[in-house]
Amino acid sequence: MTSNNAKEDISKLLELWYQQRMALTDAKISQFSTPISGVVNETYVHSVNFSKNNSTITQDAVLRMQPATSETPIPNVDVLEQAFVLRQLEQFEELLTPKVLAVESDPSFLGRPFYLMEKMAGEAIFDEETVTSDPKRLRYLYEQAIAMLARIHAIDWQNTELKSLYFATQTKSSLQVQLEQYRAHLDEASTEKSYPMFEQAYDYLINNIPEQSEAVLNWGDARVGNLLYDGDQLSAVLDWEIAAIAAREVDVGWFIYFERFLRNNAAKERLGAPSDDEIVALYQQYSGVKLSNLDYYQRWAAFRLSVMRLRAGLFDIKNGIEEPDSKVEEVNFATIEMARLFGYPEPN
Figure (cartoon, rainbow, N blue to C red):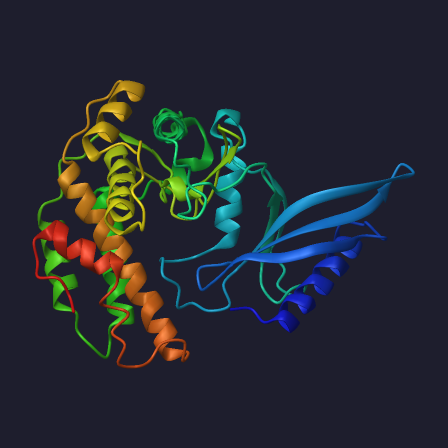
């Protein structure tokens, strides 16, 4: 968690950056807030006011900084790479991604590299407190989300620099490379303790990789919580940190996995939300493509998120946020769902 003093320091330094780097000599920052602050990245929403052509301009922007630690839930976090991906996506206006306003690789300004992107209109309306209780409206919102997922997968990535997100080699599929990345990420975090369920899950996944299907642009963190809606209309697709070129089933499996979590853990029933089978049917309708091996890809989603939660839990224990004997790294919603999907005893 970023302290108020630290936020004030970042705000002042960013104001100087606007004045010096962007030549906005009278730039002033206001409404500097922290919607998200964690070990994956630091994100700050703010407004910057400056003069231009005898008028005062106010621009809303989002600052995203390189993490202060390498002990991140996802492998190889790089905000400069994130900015690169977003800039490549700008050519596809139908994807509703935020435009990158500036990229700063010099860490001398804020202590770490960062980039600025536009603040998109809309609200995240799938949180438990704000999700609609109208079944027809909720269904309509979900249909837009699934249609967008199909639209992302239809992008012609091969004629863009997004080719750098294709991790396959001459001897390994993209999925095998990613599996090995997460295995290394797991090993790096678990030097003092073994986690047999994770080992067992990895062995299953690496030994049962499906035949490679069509490689498409993957959103990566494909879930309704990363969408904004302006009223009833989808207005923004956010959080592309784990974008990749992979089978479309990777994204769909991740989407279904998170829906299962919402279904099993929400305090109130989400009337109108599609079932797993309905998600598949809607996706196939919008994309015109028949999906396969979704059981495998949901397990892959469960393993990935469980590794992320393990690393986040160990970070919290190390930094005194959680007690050493809390077992938060191995007993959490992600590992419980992973156990259910693989048919293992639930961790306790």
